Length: 64
Image (cartoon, rainbow, N blue to C red; front, side):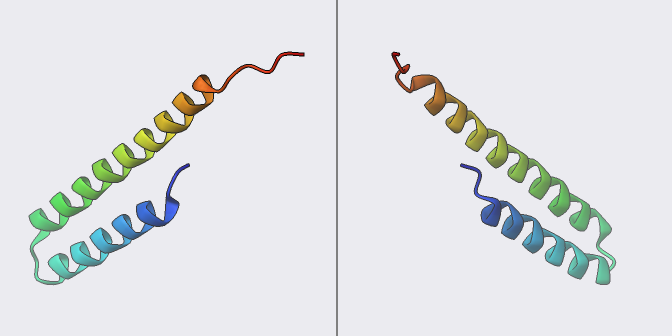
């Protein structure tokens, strides 16, 4: 199951930190923070979907 709360929190915190960096005119660090958060949440999402798909494949087939 996808943990949307974790994805949201990760992105929200990165955006907050990036806005603070931009307020200090540190645009490079802001950009790095956002790219890292994007990659991290994408990896979490893909991993959770893969686990769900694998679990479905391992379920025993129903016999009728």
